[in-house]
Image (cartoon, rainbow over all chains, first blue to last red; front, side, top):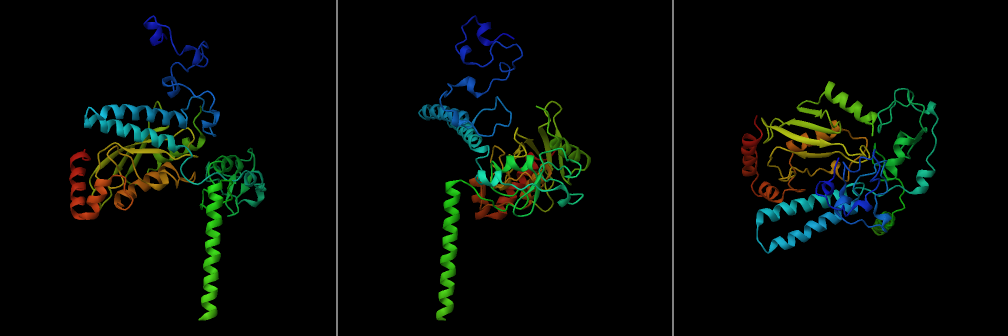
Length: 213
Length: 149
């Protein structure tokens, strides 16, 4: 298929930047992602979302944010013109892009700690009831033996290892009962410690009340 | 990428054994994209209405929640004018134990019990808090106007 630039006998200014441009099997030309519309941050590898799960052309969080900023600039220019309907349209677009940027894995609790995931127990098949299924894939444990094995969380809920590990890499709770497991996230650790201190303080107060009442 | 087995199973069950008042049909050309219809629950301001929604299962589903949006205009404090829904399980309270079915049942329940204290549509929530009867009346009017076939 001829590109816009071919049709108009123009030099494609982005040609060099596009991956697999000369590969006939590549579908990247038919499925442009957001990176085609804006400069890439070549150095910032860490901005990529950590769990791409095989998707190669998914736009990253940073892409949405940059696009939102781009529209933000348009919006500022529009303000002077006073076209309210157009401004509202841009507002909505920006909100949606920001939502999208915050969406993947960003919502909700932090990842479980690396050591917790590493030390997940291996549970023998005989420990699992006959008709129990993993609630993530809905497959019966007994009929589905070929996988990486079964594990359980401290709350005693069983899961296929293959199913629970990707979840714990995103969030530190049990999918069945939301019981928390440890996290390496500094904010989570601090919150946890503060809550514990508050609890001790409250208990100490109760003790005092009891002593002097 | 092949469609995960879980999605296939969920779809089969949705079609064979739909939840009352809810239908979800995948597109032929994109099995992750569903046309959803929810009937307005009885004894709610949306009773008698038929609401169209779109539901999309992102690449990382079920590790990430489905994206759900009302296509039919609706007057509800937790649904904005773009049809976006303010529902915790679609955001920070998502769990991979939830499914398309449970998500849609939650949306249906949200129609029965609007929550103006956790608003997405601020003006609607305000109206709901200041004059609930009038707000309900507007919701009924919108249901008649936009959600009746």
